[in-house]
Image 1 (cartoon, rainbow, N blue to C red):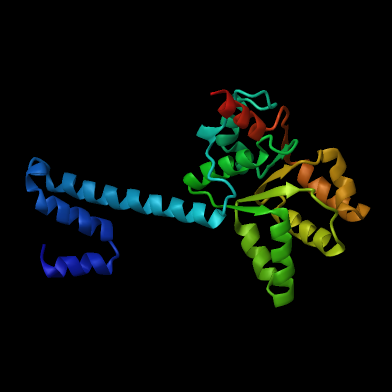
Image 2 (cartoon, rainbow, N blue to C red):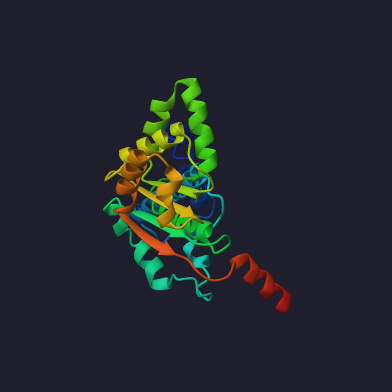
Length: 248
């Protein structure tokens, strides 16, 4: 390969095409029966596939999922109040198109976090950005951006993310500032984006948790009425896995 062509590919940041073309020239017998257009198509195909994979890796890294979960790993053997057909329907993405939310409630260890991360990871693979937060970590970050004066910018960035995942919802009562921030986030996302919420607390008790009736009514109205709700049941998945390990 001549120096000029190498430099052109480097300038255009076509690194995969550069390495693939080098490989073709080093093994000409493997490509001798292909036309110029076929070889060019191979080069472009590898470049595109690599870029798509890098994009997925960036999205997954940015999402900061708590668990490296995927829908293919969901265990449907335990009776938890959720079946494979429901997950398959969610993966079709209609809830995203209609800016709906998903709410998973149930006792600790029943798999809420796994489901939320698995669904988020799946849509990252489809090129749709997601962001995972434990609610306490989000509250701490909101406190920091308020102090730095960058709250509007952070809120704008947060609301640009199509899927916002909030875990450990309802662990403690909200302060006045936390209620205000939560309403800002949910109001901005109303009919604009989707959320996945995982909570040990039944939805019926959320109003009390939020406190201050005016805020609670506004938050619940925007959040619940556009949500698909799943109440997970059964024993802790951690306990079941431990029992299976001890039995085997």
